[in-house]
Length: 275
Image 1: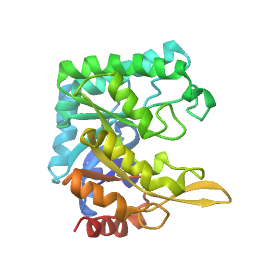
Image 2: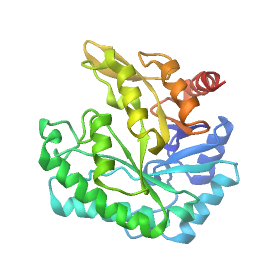
Image 3: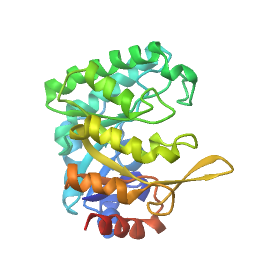
Image 4: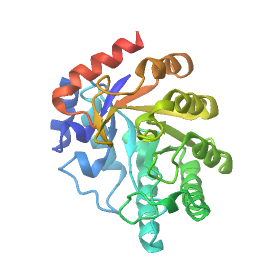
């Protein structure tokens, strides 16, 4: 099913947001509470079952379901106190995910730079060790509550390739640890010409662990990577979707960073590829 990140529609009261999402024909979303909804206070310690049920009902009333609860943290933040605080915030999402009608909580894999920017140290044994420690802690909570954690790799973060993602999955042996696959995140000017190999590696190494696919596209302007709507860039979508149709039929495909004026085209483009 084709969906969208809720906050790409806008930030507004939840019932208004649900209506706007449904108007565009989307039936599933990735929901970042603080980025998308204005009529609740989502400060740490505020989440509760009643709040979650009201938000869930606002969306289900428009026949929209929450596919992924987004809680993007930096699990390798260099300051231990800050890192522990972020892990605690993620655990809150895990505890109440089922009340939102959702079984997945997602994050990217972070950077040793506090602002999340790239550093060579992200590929160091130190970074990997901290990541494993943090994710293992989250997985323990996820197993207790019957919720799945989805990690999303990126060339600028600690999980920068399918091979590193596979290493994490092998290190933390748990069915509650799964993957959001965003091929554009794993591509840059240095590896764009090997994108088919990267896509193939991901599906061959952990295709059965991919629960959601992110959909956007990329171009390079003066060597700088820019995000564009699906079908408007360099990503080989036909190659990607052959894997999706064969290996993960029916998977939720979530538009990311697609502006309102491009959503209808992007949705139809992806639906055509699924035919």
